[in-house]
Image: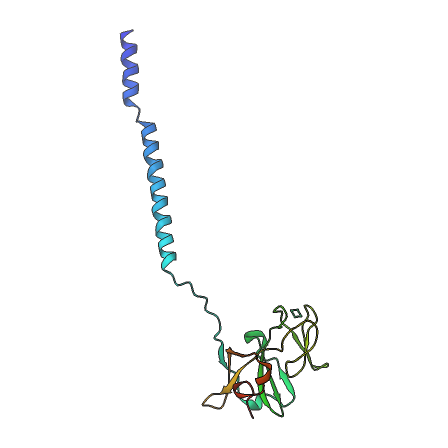
Length: 173
Ligand code: FES
């Protein structure tokens, strides 16, 4: 009997303190997770939150690249701009419908910019000739660079019908 008691006591003393060990490992894991998450959040906080897109100002080539009487869709995909050259000069439209902001298409056969969303139509001057659009297409600034190329600046938009054919929004060629 005595030897049995002795054996039990020895067994308990030989076993590692398992519960305490698991508690320590659990807390250590939790603290490690918090530390890593905190560090990642801090790194993310200090990273610049800027979207680098194409500049609103760009060179669009030489005027001779744009035939008279034509609408150029060359910059539509990358810059969202049409360039139009007429007898009066050269100008550029922002390809955004003035109704709710869809992207119209230039339909050469009809000589119209047609919006597929609700049917607004604009003529070669950008004026509304049909549909619900309340205002003409925006013209954007167009000028010459020192090397003679055209410079489009989409950040400068012309929106007043009365002054549409003046200044930087109609470039004499
Ligand atoms: S968005 Fe163009 S007609 Fe409505």
